[in-house]
Image (cartoon, rainbow, N blue to C red; front, side, top):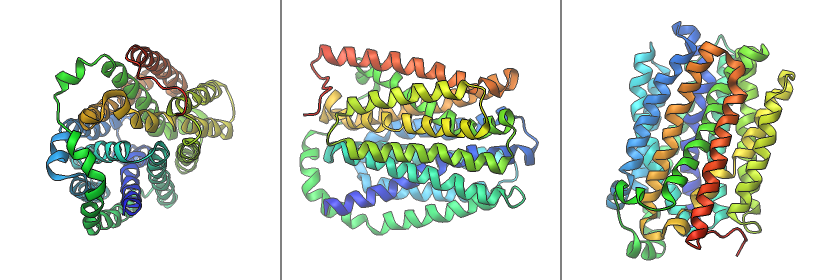
Length: 396
């Protein structure tokens, strides 16, 4: 039963990835139709991420009361409805309105499923979980690119992915009894230790602030690359909107492949080792992206950015119970997801404003600056964990 539940969780996590890559792919066509400045994308992403931060922060109370399964089902239904709303939006005000349920639906799912897998399954399962997220973020830009090839019909792209999201919502809803059966064995341990603590309590923990900064910067890299990668290829490399959308799919394929490989290696290498390997690949990819190279090589560099960033988030997430304790892991997970969306909320729109004044050539240098922040943050986190004898670089 635990394996069947894991499969359901994997499918549900696809729904988390589907919306994340869609807007960035469609934005060049949307802003042309609505006659908006490039930086206006920040209004929509801010609304999505702001609501996700709120739902992440309250996720511990909601999930501990209603259960991860029910919260997941309701949240996926909300995101499916929101995506359908995007398809019928006539201006940016409607996009911002439907961004609210899209963000609220994402936060609780992200926190709940990540913590559930971190508590009850292996590191390899966590990496595979985020590989399924990669499936979601890889499918949606490809489907959007097909729609864009037909007279920039981004609305058809949103309509198609809303149907896929609806099917996933139905699957999760119909399999709620599986959660009850599986939890009879899995949730016995969790029920004895789980408790809700305040954000102020977490803030006082020695490693919490460093962990939050690590999540902020790593997710800022991941999201900025996804939202602005297509626009970078259009404005800097001279590609058409539909061609750039197809090339951006490589970024998400790289992320998916990186998390699949990380999952396969997780039984042999520690989570910290996988994180360090990902950082090294990411550094090389960012240097390549800075070079004055042809569009095909830039697309490959974006693939490597996705491949390098891939193992960082899932492995840091899986380490949460070990780093902070199983008893408060759900509260800490919610705070970490909120921190992630702080980076997602602030940094991509900030890049949009800077790019509007400086130009899209700033893109790889902006990612590099975020990378430096991530390295400094994770170094601080490791140093503080060592003081508490919680850092385990070797596979046990």
